[in-house]
Each structure stands twice: as C-alpha cells, then as structure tokens.
Length: 365
Ligand code: GAL
Ligand code: CA
Image (cartoon, rainbow, N blue to C red):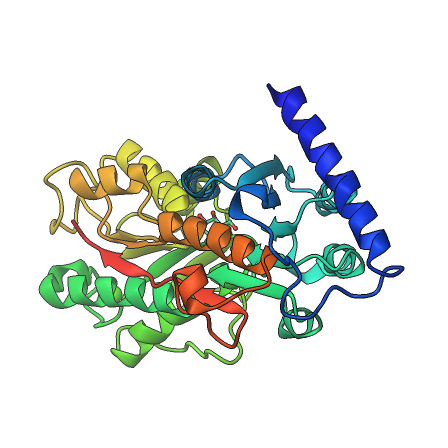
C-alpha cells in the first residue's frame, strides 16, 4: 500500500519535472497561478511536524489528515524529531519527490531559512504553521504563508481567568498583600507562544493591580523572578519536566507561599497538578480552599486538559484550536498549490494575503 503510494508520487514528480522542462528551462511558473489546472485530488502536500511526541501537534496532525482525506488531497506528514537539520533533509526529499506544496511546522523558526530556500528554488508554495517565522522570512517569498493563533490572546485569557478567581476568592491571596505570588512554567525558549503567553498573562495581572514590578518591555523567558513571580523556568511544553520543576518549587518556596501557577500549555499545567496532588492539593472538591488548592491556568484545551477542568484540578485553559488550524493548513496548502489563495478557497479569512489566524477561546468548564 505504502510502496504503491510512493511509486505514484514518484511518477507524478517525473511528469511534473518534464512538464516544467518543456515550459522553458526553469522559468518561473506564471505568477498567481502556479498550479494551473491542478485538481485537488492531484495535490500532493509534503508536511513535517517539528516532533510527533507533542500532544497538541498530534491533534493538529489528526486534523490535517482528516481534512486531506475529506477533500481527497494527498498528504504525507513526517516527524522532524525536534532536529532542524533532519527537517531540512525531509523537505529536500519532498522537493525531489515532486510534491506540489510544503506544509511546515518549523523545529526552530529562527533558523528556517534553508527550508525557505529549498521551497523558493523549487518555486513551491510553503505554508508554515504553529511556529511563526520572522517577518523578514515571510516577506522574502510571495508564496510563503502562515497558519496560527494570536499568541498574546492566549496569555491575556490566562491572566483574566486568574484575576477573576482572585476577585471571587479573596482568601486565595494567602499572605493578604493584595497581590498574586505565582510560579511560571514556560514553553520552548523563544517560541512565540511561550513568550507571548508569559508576557500577556502578566500584563493583565499588572493592569488589574494584582502583580507589580513587571515590565513588558524588558521581561524575557530567562528574566530572574520578581516580587510576585516566585520562579520562572522552561519545561519545554513537557509534563514530566513540569512535575519535576513544580516539586522543586514546592520544596524550595513552599505551598503556603505559592498562590498560583501559570503554565504555557496544558501538558505543563497537568505536570504541575501532578506535583500538587502528590502534596495533597488540587483534589476534587478543594477549589476555593487556599490550604488545599492552588489555581493553575494553561493553554490548549487538550482532552487531558478538559478532563482536569472537569475534575476541578485545573482552574482554566484556552482552546488552541487544532481542528481549525489543521483544516486551514490543508485548505491553504491546496489553494496555494492551485495558485488561487482567497478567503473563499481557503475557507478562512486570509490576512495580508499570507496569514490565517484561528482565534483562541477561554475554556473554564
Ligand atoms: C503550542 C502549544 C504547545 C506545543 C507547541 C509546539 O502552540 O500550545 O502545547 O504544542 O505549540 O510548538
Ligand atoms: Ca498574595
């Protein structure tokens, strides 16, 4: 089955190459119509996800596969194994195989230039997703696109959920200083989501008067903790790493001092909850009791995240909409391969001819 698929792809690629040859020695395909009359069932999308072992990205893969199946396009998703050079090689193989479009979740968005160059040399459209390349990269190629979510909104929503909890539960301010003393679990260093979720959750709390000494212009993921931020470290989106960090903080800071946990994603929020539960906190029914419950907020609304909301261990999460992002990646890839990117062909609003933004949504029950 798999072998056949590869052979078919191989023939298609040879045909594509020979057609390109007839078209006049590598001259660019007509602009705005790179795909000519390419039928959707002939569109072959070569995709790489930065690593398969990531809960949210697994949901995106499922959504992409479902959409490609439903519209009848071919989609091959490969594992970048968290290694940018591996991802570069996979992309080059896709180009050799003759795919019509690339759909790429960068391993490192800041060193994605070789991938962009491969796409550009082969005159292939490229749809980046989840890790946003710089404006310079996006603007350097008219066939570069991006599908994602506005990271600052997820940070704002986490901050709002926490602020609401403190307003409704004044005893959650355990030392009675009118501020929230919190610990923060951040995602991958320099990932736009990790940075913005950390920044904007704090900005909301600062604006609400619930933390102080936070400066949005100077804070970075490696900034030392401030008065209200008791600790801040990357657990790389990972549950086990977050449990380890939280256990350390429970020991070094103390459960009586920690008033909240801000985690850049559900997997890390759940890791913190595991540590809290081992210490007798955040069990079902303990919400509102400051001696038994510390509010935890995070992002993604994965199945496990929603289960934690349901059992009361997680205060709130933010839907990072894998279904619509996955669908948008596939639709945009097809539209780009066919040289016809519009709101109507993509099925989502396309901003500046390049970006599809899928909104975040607060989830509290
Ligand atoms: C984020 C998501 C994280 C992780 C990351 C990978 O958007 O919230 O859970 O999947 O992407 O780049
Ligand atoms: Ca306090």
